[in-house]
Length: 148
Image (tube, rainbow, N blue to C red):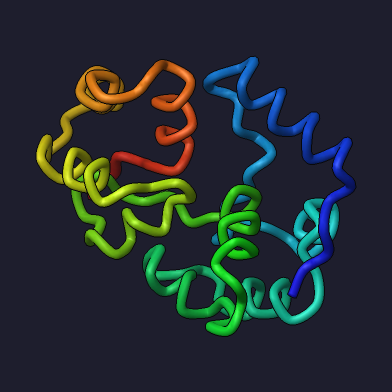
């Protein structure tokens, strides 16, 4: 498992993310996070070791598979709010999209419906039809658009 962040620190991180829609620096990329960064984010023990041993992850699904399968979903959602492998909008599977904390099947369908994405602006515009700007920014912080 991982250590819980102090409530005040977690609240400050959430407020910071809400106040600065594009600033989700509190979420580490699991492919590049160091032991020190994971420790500072409150991720320790076996979870930190699994992340470090799995780097770089071939996909978000591979990252998810490396995390303790017995970890409660609420704890995984909390972890994924702090450490995640960004999902490629044009390549991610439905299962990978569903790993985004708070993702619903309906919203996952919307992610898929607008493929191929040609820009993040397109993502903002299309997903913005269904959720407010703050939620678009939160969702955007979990995705990438790689042309490789």
